[in-house]
Image (cartoon, rainbow, N blue to C red; front, top):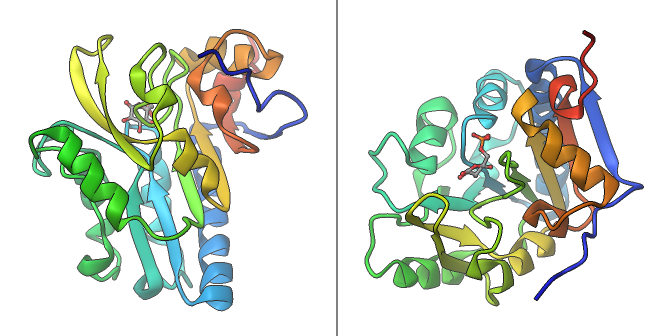
Length: 234
Ligand SMILES: O=C1O[C@H](COP(=O)(O)O)[C@@H](O)[C@H](O)[C@H]1O
């Protein structure tokens, strides 16, 4: 089934001069959203993304004051089919770069069990532990326009439910991923995107071209560096 892009202009796209400036802005937004959610509902439910882009944001976040970490509940938008100690684990990256520095109670950190087999059981278990509604879903975008582990042409693009196991032929591997239904049910969706290698996919999305999975995210806030936005000077 072909779904029309939904985040074509006008979109909330914020462009920053450097990857660090984009990361700092996303970290500041995280701190603000956490305080607001805790004030309003007593907890902040946030899903983190994988890949390398969020590392700068994590490094900023761990030093920001006034984040109510004890009321933060952490989830993941996707995971590789590996255990938590693998260098490829999205949970492992978040643990090393952020969670080991901040006082989030371990019982409030909910990783996807990438080592579990069959992987469908891990997806079902994850769907069952997700909160009623995430406050913020922090996502990234690959240079092929994938987001979470929703890659172009893969079955999970059209999966129902909240989480799915997804065969990704481009990577010759299985992944765990939140579904678009779950991503779009969050109160807010943020895309943190940096690097020249993302420029074509982002230009396509902004122009409403192609069928990039990331285009199915409804009303995202984009935190983008100038290189990804194609705004660097020659
Ligand atoms: O495979 C993945 O890729 C995307 C983008 O990663 P990046 O390294 O280019 O930042 C990421 O958002 C996703 O969570 C991850 O598993």
